[in-house]
Length: 109
Image (cartoon, rainbow, N blue to C red; front, top):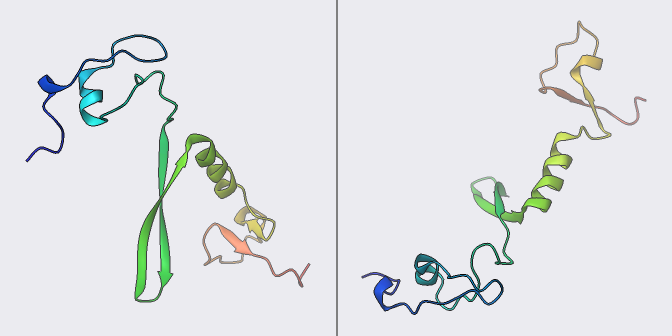
């Protein structure tokens, strides 16, 4: 059973903003739409998988966000935090088993 109505039974409509014909496939997939793709107010979305829970009770959620929110997220995740120090700042004879960043104890400084 097809969840979308057949294309030949869909009424052809014009966009209420630009008066251009709305593609039949768009009308088939989004019944009742009144705008074409170019005039739509929806923008592209990005998704980031996020691990939730603890122990044996973990799952992965998908956080959906706008491109602007995604850019802010990327900026936050790529900046080193105030509590971390890049490994290039470490002494050369110190083995860093914590990855590229070392956690700094605020009491040491």
